[in-house]
Length: 401
Image 1 (spheres, one colour):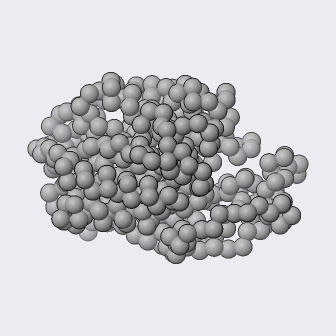
Image 2: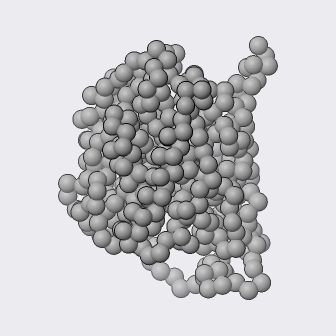
Image 3: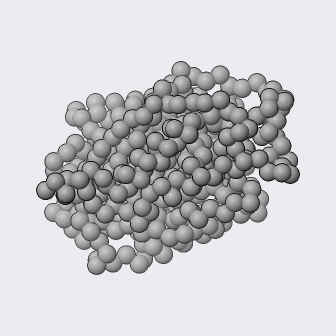
């Protein structure tokens, strides 16, 4: 098996749009990156994972990135793109010039990523409950699903690649204020790269639709972002330091993919649990549900933001662990759909779509009460996550054998 990894700086060379605004900015605190991990199994297409410091990557953007990589390599690939979801990054939804710049950076560099051949590739997966960076922002709800996760790949006994995962919004810093920043994902990666020279780190955002630093941060400064990010770095580092040869397992890489249709229903009061005495934020949501809230001009959606179907992919490392990539900002409750010890969920991957509330939690919230996605669609995704986390297809193959 071959593995290749490289990160490319994508600091804007000209003023670009802030998140979902036409307001231009250019300066960056730290750096922004496009991180590419390439895995070449012996009996399947190469798998390329592209992680970009930006708030969202619609399927149109992923398709264009996949095309650029395919053309640069001169061969077909599996490709999944993920956004780190930092809200203080250049906007790849509204700024076409910046999108073209990022594509050009990938085009110039991807074919030059060195591939290293290993006789034996193993992995070690770890996860632990971690709530020091964020908690659920649904009032009076404590989620049991907050995790810091590490997935490390070893080539011939040497750790070469680690996916860092956490399911809290990277939104400590004030929005649309000051310099661009990669927030806690960028900080953790940079610090660990310095501590472990020669190793590659990238990031996946778990189900963080209802989780944020809102109830944890002291203020919304850059310095507070660093303070919280350092707590998470320490947790990641503690997991890395406890890895051992006895816990590693062989990698047998496989890939599967499916789609399901978009299914919307009217947004009504009857679909949510309404408190007897709603607080100020809940009253605002109710006003929007009732159509009595003040109407503000909204940005007109671009054609690629109007999708008809969603893509979900499954990267299988062994019969005991896999990653499911899906486009929604899933509520943390969706980690209750899977066998957590053998599965991670990477959100805002395979395209993008907005908040998707869970199957059981129906409490009124500023995001989840207004999305209009049907119970049927939520049930379909919930069941798919459960089946894939148990690797239904592999279990069936074992039974038939």
